[in-house]
Image 1: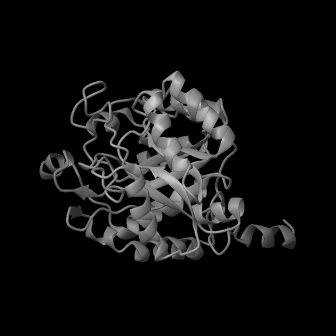
Image 2: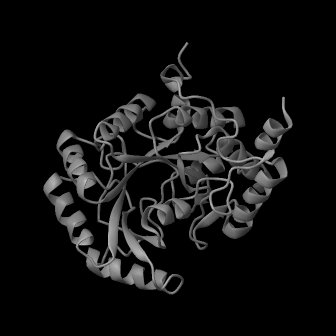
Length: 330
């Protein structure tokens, strides 16, 4: 091996000053300025709560459908938009916006209702696009066709919850759909070129580190453009509290989680945009892990771990291979 090759392998790949492809870097590359999400609650529910897929919802999901930091659902969308926007403007006074339909399953309604909600946000001054969080079992053909239309005239992301590829985990957390359903949802969106972001959770009950990284490996082989890596955190009044009391939930330690995130980033292709690398909950509802409240400490520790390893996103990524989409199959 030549000295030049050795130097190239030791030189980290950077996205700005980060060793992974951050959401902020991506948006600045696309728009040339600061963009932030305005988190909204469109008043949706979920097929995993109303009985269509299951009842009770995912055991980790809060009463606000994972939209604990979104606008107040008692307010109409325009009031939510302006309230959240003004709060965010205290940090970034000159930024523009992506309308983020966050709480519950945001394609779980007739397409006519979706059109009314999405369009009113797109009409607001400074809005450059939409991000829509949903489930893969909430993508009927007419909704996908409307999303494809949106994708032609605005900047669009659809975020799909996967959480884990392991069926035993999905059943334990009452996910209400299987891995095959997720792959079908991704295929529906990608048929129309819609940017797709997968959500996974590290620390789900019963999962080993090997299982968590198998989920990452599967995602690394999918035709997805974005990833959110969440930390499992337990909130009061969620079904998972009973699992916790039964000894089925063990919180990850901070150093363990940091190591898992670094492992995950190394496996993911460098073109995948990393929308999130941790997660936390409202302080008044959080049961644990309590270290998750120190968000910047966790983010800094992830950066430091990549520096310590002299590593970066994609360093250990393998070429995408369709046969490896189903790692549980023999």
